Image (tube, rainbow, N blue to C red; front, top):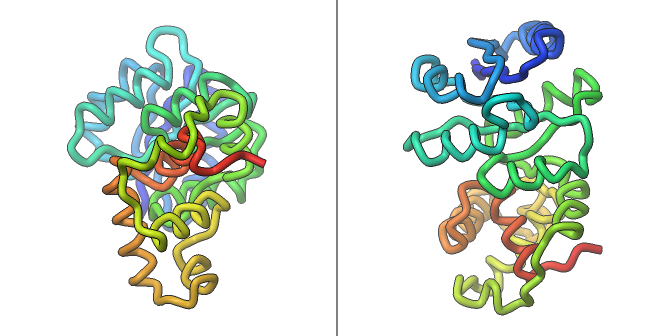
Length: 215
């Protein structure tokens, strides 16, 4: 069972998300919060696997709440930020501080369910094209030297480039003709060397450094 905490200052949005999520046998909403200030205590008490976090809230926004989770908990839940506009500066900032992906409030129910499952397993990067667009608009592009100190091997660099296209571990394995376990090992090495919490953070680092150039 994948447990979910809903964080949004609009009760109607929370009600709609709860109805969608609770209709699935493997998903369960374990709590709701109306502001980012409530998130820390609720996560400590409920230990959800995934937090659906609105980025714009009146007191504590989703960026600050996400940062707090990453700094406070040794094993924080995965965070999916929820937004109205995909090119929102708030979305980019939330991804940079630790959110694993984002959802638009107009996203189809089936895609919301798929996103929650994906981010819970940590297997796939969410919406790589949209993340590329965000980094293209906001990234610092320091050049390939930005990742030189990470010491990635040639194969690890290749895996990182494929991760940036949104391929799953299985798809990367098929592309490189290696086993799933080998891919998982390479992905783990990439995350460790970049100091990235998950695939999204690694890909953002790759784009911001100029290691990968947005098309």
